[in-house]
Amino acid sequence: MERATLATWKERVEQELDQVVTFWTKYSHDSEYGGFFTCLTREGQVYDDLKYVWLQGRQVWMYCRLYRKLPRFCWPEILDAAKAGGEFLIRHARVAPPAKKCAFVLTRDGRPIKIQRTIFSECFYTMAMDELWKATGDPRYQREALEMMDQIIYWVRVDPTGLGQSQLSGSPMADSMAVPMMVLNLVDQLGEDDDKLTRKFAELGEWCTQDILKHLQRDGQLVLENVSKDGKEIPGCLGRQQNPGHALEAGWFLLRHAVRHRNPELKAHIIEKFLLQPFNSGWDTENGGIFYFQDADKFCPTQLEWDMKLWWPHSEAMIAFLMGYSETREPALLHLFCQVAEYTFERFPDREHGEWYGYLNREGKVALNFKGGPFKGCFHVPRCLYMCEELLKALLMAS
Image (cartoon, rainbow, N blue to C red):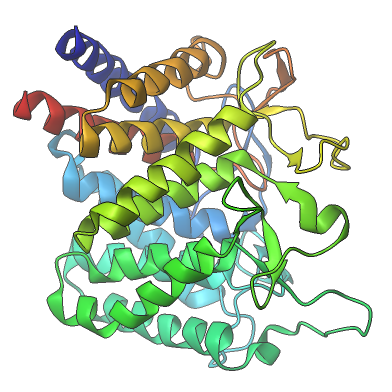
């Protein structure tokens, strides 16, 4: 039964990945300036030519990863588009070179419009450059990745003032789980198949792990998005905020870390606390799907979109449960993967025009019908499908 289930999902995932990649390669490439259009209608028409640095870096990473890992995507066109996107980032992402701070939004031809006082544009820049290095062998890209990584580490662990964050007297000294999560993902990325960099970033990876784990609060009963610097719960809506999809994404980041470091106790802890608990509290038992936000004390969340069903939490849940199953062979985890995947494949894909809708209402009906925007690009969906395909192939080979 389990082998048949795995084989069925492998076929479905492969077909879906092919359709998703076709959509982005057909509609998103900017042949004039390089980089990618990400604001695309349901049919693939560009409705805004602004370029979001997060999404530029993510698409470069995604294309290079597919080119390197899946033979059917080893197309010169994909690598050429990735290189054009990488060169666009090198030329334009940084607001005031040689300073490392990157813009959040650029014009089509690369002029900065807006920055964020966070590390995330720089993180996706690093991911893009490292994958370009791995796909092309050009050491210039690796230098870009490592230099930006050094800057990110300095901001996160030494002095964040270069990000432009002013600490007002009344604002809470809060730590967001997103920061150690993203840095842990970079540790994984840069250390892949590189023992020297694995050793270099080993202590950083452990720091990230412990910083994520401090978001497990109330005697280990829930994961909070924001805690104090010393790992205590903070008051108000900010302190009570939960994001089940984010906890699940952190879960599979941590699971990979536990597996790499051969830590079975951490692995079991992560599966219970960062996979099962967030899913059990975050699944909408009435309508299906994963809530976007929740409040730890059951107050109504203040985010207007709190009960919507978004593409990326469901993508992260599929990865998390299939990865958990691949590490444990626990049938309950495979069942949860199937539960999430059935909901996701029934509601998010657009069978007429390809790719997935990103935003459903609580009942699972399409609320916003564009395929890409300021936050949704060529990343979460194809990353999920690619990773699930690789996990399913490995499971089938081992069975």
